[in-house]
Length: 291
Image (cartoon, rainbow, N blue to C red; front, side):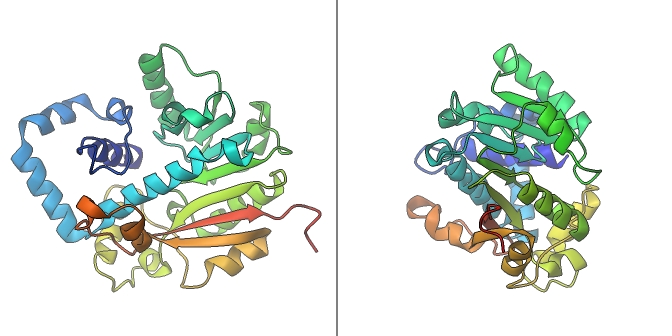
């Protein structure tokens, strides 16, 4: 359900006028239930009312998600030029970057990992869109957090010696802290020189239910209601030492409120952005750099 929800966010942003939208995803609509899409077209007033209700309950959260999509897009757009020969998307859901970001094509091998049921639906849709599965993309059915996926990844042609960009969009908060630590430690151990990881996270207070921030508890309650609860977060200032201890350096933390000046300017200046999300970008310390 979460995968389709994020596809809906990408579709909704893509339908905005060109001078307003912060990204465009022409494939997002294919991953939505056509019955729901048709109903939405016929009931614009009801859709607006629903959108207003969600915004009141979770102020600026939708714009934080869309800002996250744009930031990930920008990093992926530059990946080939920065020497990344592989992109691994963990918890890929209905991610479409391998198909819509031209700089990846012909330069970068993409590996998508997600639960088998999600991948089965996705590959079926991708085949309908393009007539076949793209040669540059490998799909690895695997439940994140259910044991090491590295053997399956390497069997699909992944090389742990190459410079790799790991994307964990909308994933970390839905894993337990031990699973987060195990996953990020595993990435550090299976990454070539210069490899990097990009992920988003929420405050620890959202995970434990103590958040007093605007919309914090509502967001948490909503994830529980749809059966994909937030399980982990980071206290303020915690993520940098956490990643350093796992073998990362050059760590950058980007708070979602920064999206207001990065993307929501000009005609977008009135779009509120929740501050309940942050992104982290970190480089794997090569074996020669470790003490």
